[in-house]
Image (cartoon, rainbow, N blue to C red; front, side, top):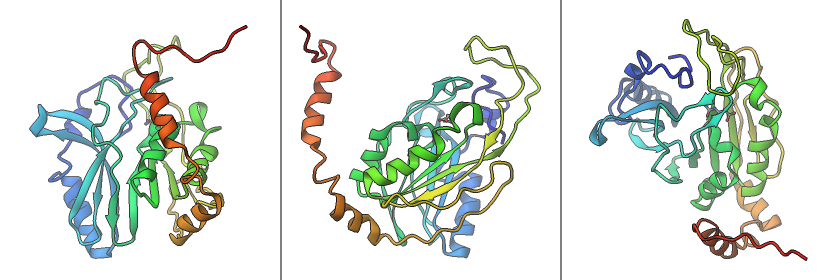
Length: 262
Ligand SMILES: NC(=O)NCCC(=O)O
């Protein structure tokens, strides 16, 4: 399925939506996970039949036993440049769940969620040792941010992060705009790949190619999460109660910013 979410064409693309628990993609990945003794993070367009056929942007996590461990949904829906996905699916309602796998505790921060430091933080507060960030994004929009955000999240949250982006260009027969004043066009631009893995100490792997598909194999010593935590104490010094109180005030309709003026 092409990356179609911003063309505003619902058909035929929504016909690819499938159940997270029993869909064809999940069944296919279950077989592979068991056969190769690996955990699979499988991003899909989810159709939620028990809730009015709602569409979600969902990642299914499949255990190395072949069982469906669970699913997690995209929390932040982009409304930027050509990436306006708000007509496709709803903001996720699964919070920041973390999956205990045979190889470590993992979480999935889907695509645009990587621009939100609190999103990374909450996966980490729930105990994630590795946070995956499956993405589909293009050069003009975000390539300058790409090497920084997931790497910074690994440092700030004492965990590993995996920044994953696709490569290629999709051509759509019908022109589309995103209401951003730009001319109608047939493609989003180039998806620049450049996937990489970052460690809690700030080190990272080289990136994969920005033009061709690749496979990145990285060995992660999960002890580094706690070792870095004990060195820097970002969690211990986080003052979360202070932020919780201030944020609770900031979201109230009667909030007044605390600015001192002469
Ligand atoms: N698919 C998606 O969320 N893309 C948004 C673009 C970006 O976050 O760079």
